[in-house]
Length: 384
Image (tube, rainbow, N blue to C red):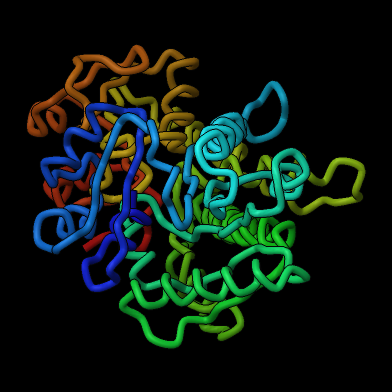
């Protein structure tokens, strides 16, 4: 969605057709209402001129296109030990059924080597363009890109020319000058995405383990992390402890990279996945050791003010607490039901705070200031 809105900006003189199988989501977009909690998407839909046409029927839409971008979800399948790429493959088939020549750009996160396999199965006019977007800030990150990378067969002059044009289009659509760009083979571009996210997961796991040590020894975690970060090679970023990394990207990307290492001697990637699971068990044990009568989970999302709690580390902590017979309630404005995962949902914040004697918050919020003595959180930089 963020790609469609980015490229539909009127000054680019491009017509963008956005196809989604979710009819309800398309209906919202037709009314310029964002179905996602994303500040920039909400703003651009309501305030900016866009040549943007959402549809829930893909009949004929690829026939006259100059480029087709595929950004379907690729969840990690535990049974197969790899991403489920079926939606990407189905999309390629649908495009080729209507247009045999249009360049296809895959932006879904995929296993290393997938683009080449699709080129072998279909044709060479398939590229990969990794995305580096955060949940809830996808359009912002597209408007302020850290880098723009296209994976293409650089031995093919026509494809290299197209890749350069694609980079120029994305750069022109952004609000940032002098963005770093890179054209590399598609397999290397796939590796960039997985290794970048796995490095971020490694950093999270490291600072979480530092925080576990500090908590067990009654040390000031914030002071230690700040001191460590004063080394300019480390820096004061991406260092705030949490209950574990989660969300849509990091868990599945680390698992996929781990699977790609089959037959290759390696320790770090495996250890990062294990460390994240260890951290969640540690957090649950710290809560259990408080002997709470009633634990409240404040927000199920990974990030402050987000409404998406897909693969949130909080959910795994909640599940461990349930297994130990802890009485649980949650406060989550994004939920309308009165129960979630066999956990009571309390919709009134005041009732929630008065009902629970321990409140668990992955991320601190000012709404908890009046019950700070009840709150268990490892968000050492988020308190205000």
